[in-house]
Image 1 (cartoon, rainbow, N blue to C red):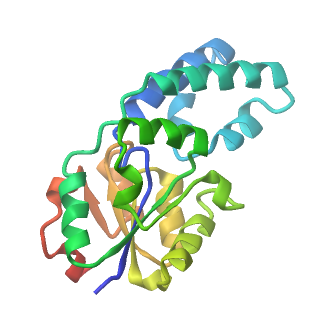
Image 2 (cartoon, rainbow, N blue to C red; image 1 turned 30 degrees about the vertical axis):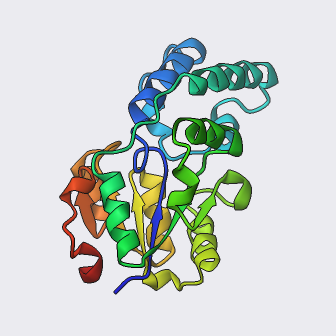
Length: 210
């Protein structure tokens, strides 16, 4: 039986990917009007990675985007993915340790905590971009989360939706559950041990069988 569950945030715990796609679609339309679909290529990338790839040496543009993103996140809705609250309640009863492994920063998390005052109490550890040196698809964040929980990587189940996130879980040597909230089932399936649309599709005995 696995001992720990490690969750990405956006697209796994929080139903926010559609909102971020809208935001980045508007930004890329402004700065890269001749290139379509860039908002889909950045899924799973940190803000630093996005800036390094698309806005290197463009400080003015980066500052404008950062300000727009901060304003946008203040007005976002941080609704839970269907079935998530019930699922982690079931894991808690089983004595499973739980952590968040997200590329979001502390500023973003403050907005999540404001809408969900009990969020921090749901988890044994929350790791943000400030807590690890290398971003997904590097397994650094997941390995640090396992260490924080006092478990081995092979004793963990990781839940991800982005390609980079799925690769990070696999690289960490963990059992991988892929959600189809961001990518199609066809894209997720080769990178995950189990594919779900949301947490209502995981039975009570799933964790014992993982």
